[in-house]
Length: 271
Image (cartoon, rainbow, N blue to C red):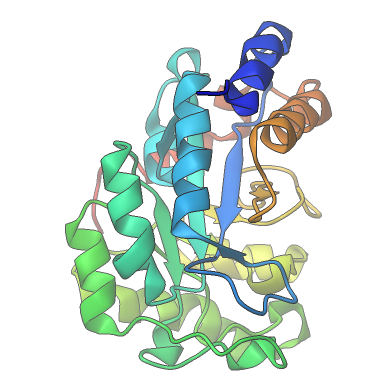
């Protein structure tokens, strides 16, 4: 059998991993299913997810939820990678969850309690994808996944009135508590759109952390940067994204100073 080129890439690149950086590495997924039309690059096949998680394991990484990541002491965090899945597609329970469990991973699933059993209408003209209802969200939580809020209806929070913003942040947290019995600690900004007003609303709602795409207007626990993962990402691209993340964030403050509020909020207390 021919040698796996991905394995050769891992062997070479494992010696080139830069020193641990201040900001933990967090990966962003969306839908996990067989790919057809995918104009926004949000779909990863189950087989490709399996290969990506296997790559993490070969690199001595373990994929975990953001709550687990943040409550792990900084000196033990280097081998952990945060795994997040945005939007709450039904394929998470059907396709992604079995792959995660097979690799011994947990993840944070950011869902939309204002669109239970709905669809990704905001992605038109992209492919229609159904969203989880309350039973599916509970199934993910019962399997050990962290459930976080993605707002109510996947709206650009920076464009909303004060009353609308409060509904998206505060009310979505209340609804998720009603569904799972656990008050969510994490919030994920739709489209990655965030400003000071949005950050303040998320903080006031009682969340312990917020996930963005870039560090945003106020680097810290409420604008955690993430790396988008696509179907095209195999060994070489994953290694390059790991390297880029570490080089970009190596000069930031140490994690224990950067994330004190988040670590405290996810210390295990339920409100």
